[in-house]
Image 1 (cartoon, rainbow over the protein chains, first blue to last red):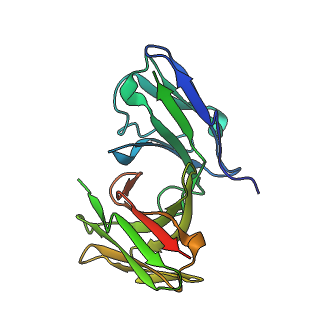
Image 2: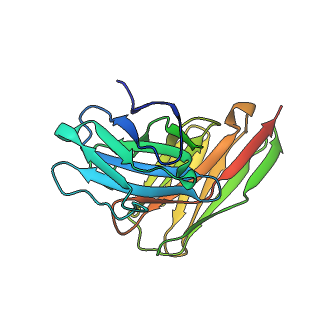
Length: 114
Length: 111
């Protein structure tokens, strides 16, 4: 079946603008994760959704970052008032259940803030 | 706080060689460890997942081992091919719901 998809694949924006990144997980996967991969920082966790439970937001770097997951499927990561340090690849992953199962990653959205 | 380290950061080998990539983690209280492959400009592809109760997993030419007590894992690639060239990432799930990643090993296999 189809894997995790993300859109857009690339996004260039001006400093101060808001951006929305979209993730479509694998159908039937209840767990969804957002990660960020930036030069010099490696891959870092941002936020985690599991079913109808409250999301784990412990990795969000600031209150400019937020995410939601509608209907237990599609998720949107929003970055408000973007800064140049937000430039990175934003990766989404899903798994059949939390933790013990393999996480499958999407191709990522490459964000460049000018 | 869990920290994951991968050595070496980069590796270049001739085609056909067997090679070992190393991953170490500071907190041995993990649930599982996962090895990924990342090609330039692409997302991550899961290679192997080892549960904390397991010692190793095998898939084709890949074998991953886990020594939880010493905080180490190795990824063994047999008979390397140019198509194996990529960045290899290890990640552990310990407390919480996320994976903690190492910095990766950039592998180049020369024909």
